[in-house]
Length: 209
Image (tube, rainbow, N blue to C red):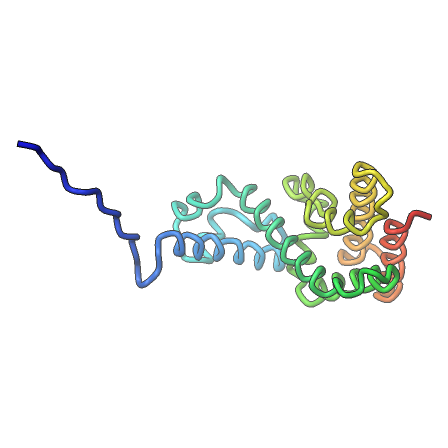
């Protein structure tokens, strides 16, 4: 007699209060990242610890380690997440004027400065903490692909890929240093003077003169 076996069935996706396990994990990791950004804005990255984040979010450390290898991993993910969000907004705000080099350079700088002033937490994370936090110092805006890519794609097409990459990294690195100095209070210049200078730096990177 031929034996038969039951056809395999799919295990239903587990739900908790109407959300999947993946959704709840994303919610927890986002809560931890948001808490870290708040702590950085208030006291700097030195205040960010696994214990302080779990206490602020009401999560235990098991949930921390389901998303992050350690504190440094969380800070690195937070930095990249924030940088990518900023770059996306910059692209949205300036795409229509890329053909006008001067207008583009000024708009990029003005919008970036405005975003940092509007949310000092992001300014401290992206521009100030990399000077004192080892894991962030190893990243920095100049090494975040989303920023260098934005600059590189607007450089003269007759330049080689290597030339465009080096120019983009140099420009973003220089801007990071200047902006970081201003936001940390080390540069005594007006906001208008800051924007004008940074726009000129960015504009030189875009020309082949």
